[in-house]
Image 1 (cartoon, rainbow, N blue to C red):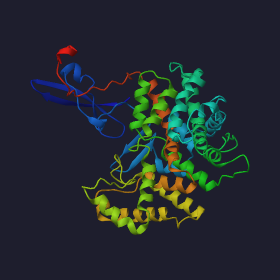
Image 2 (cartoon, rainbow, N blue to C red):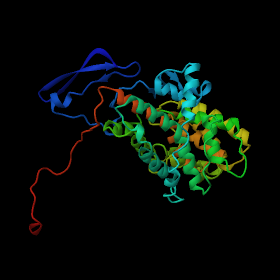
Image 3 (tube, one colour):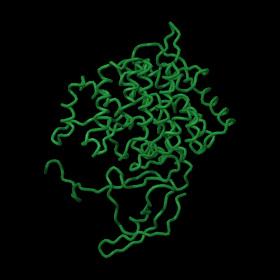
Length: 432
């Protein structure tokens, strides 16, 4: 529970003066509790995008945009990315604490043993066109899980909620990898329980039945970091979508499918795909000044993708870790001469030195580097957002479980500032 701050906020309008309690979080600014504003004052607040509104109480993730800080359950993201691994981070997000060795030894097999999909789901994939975007396939398949795993859809049963959570985390790599395989016309590769989480995903994406595929540990580590860095990010659009869907009592698979659909938007999860497309549009290093000039021109709609962040007003803490992984992956694969990567490196240099970028704090963000890494690994841009969805699933599930267990949660019901026609009477069609 948020702590009472012993402060009050006074709101005055017209001939009314109302006092509201204030709440103090463990980190971040105080919050004015306006739950009774409409009942006491007969007014609403107006906050498009909810940029100044706390929609829920949460103990999972904290962001300080001014400091460039991201904490999972209090742990800095750079420490987790450097010292931990994705399934340990999953445990942390789900249960609130880092696991002991015994707890981790129990948790990892619980996830690993659920990586297979119900066999009939292979036929479900064949209902999609081969050229369907993998995100469209993922939305459909995840939503259909409630038809295949209806023994874990009773949200009032804590055991079923736990089973659903483990199933989602375990099966989402298989769902994403099979969406990719289906889109390129290759046979599905089944999960292997002897591989770690990231290696298993890469194996399902790039192995073929005709020959062996050995996952390079550097690529596996880079993928594990991508998963960790994207695991949760507070109350963003897709997480809020999951919570809003869950507030109605919808089953967990439907809620996660809703989150995936929201993540698909280019302003959210599609940013890394848009970033790489931009780098390819620029094409060569000699064209960079032209695009930099366009980015500085207020009358030009062109925007540099992969720079700056809506929340972070400092360097994106995830980008620092991702840059290290990018250097390792590019060094391993020996593709420094790739024109797209040369453009990316020069843009990075300019963004860190150019007065315009520094003044506006337009630093390279996590999307900038993750797109470069995934491209280098051999993923098409259409798979960037599905991989993001894979990583974010544990965050969505953790947020969903927290919301369901919150005794104060209610069905989401935002209000509006109505600007339509006032009351008018119906006119028969002959008289119009």
